[in-house]
Length: 266
Image (cartoon, rainbow, N blue to C red; front, side):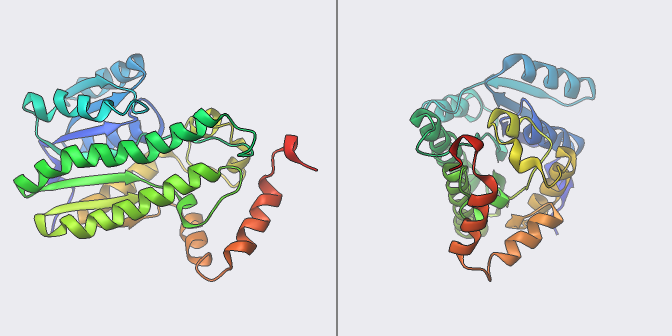
């Protein structure tokens, strides 16, 4: 049975590796002997993490990229597979959100969520997965969310993109399993990271935050064993189970009341 020892010596590309869950996933994979290709927009953060991992004996490459740019996935491919590095582990972690009333938020911020959370995931998977198929091995981790199990008012676009990510991961997993490729949708709940501050979504931190290293540990173990969906928090597992039995209209009614921004309250 496959396990985390299979990651030893393999190249892993981790997007959004400059902080939060991405950095934690990079550290976790390095702990199992994977070689890391770290990518994000902030080069200084990547270099700091790269130096930390290299000091522990991990081989590290850094490629700065902005996945809001549709050309970035191909640039990442050219800098890795195109340069002779076989990427056996693809971690589609990069993402962004925005907490606000949809009718008030900047349209570009809404579209950026679609480009980074959805389009970049498809583009990256499309360029790297065919090489995995050729080699008959590979692992793909796609960051979804507990928000992928129901609509969430005031992070409406974000939740919709995460539903896309989860279903994309599940469909892809079924397609490529016969080639020895494992695909896992990671569905964390509130996690200790910069995400909520950047998205101005501090309201969703009220239920407590799971440490990013804990999320990474559970995610990498699930990926190794080929588990197709992992909800790393107990509260996430409970909520994902409960929404199967509750009307969507009822769920969104109560979320809308609880999450409505003060500026939008009547």
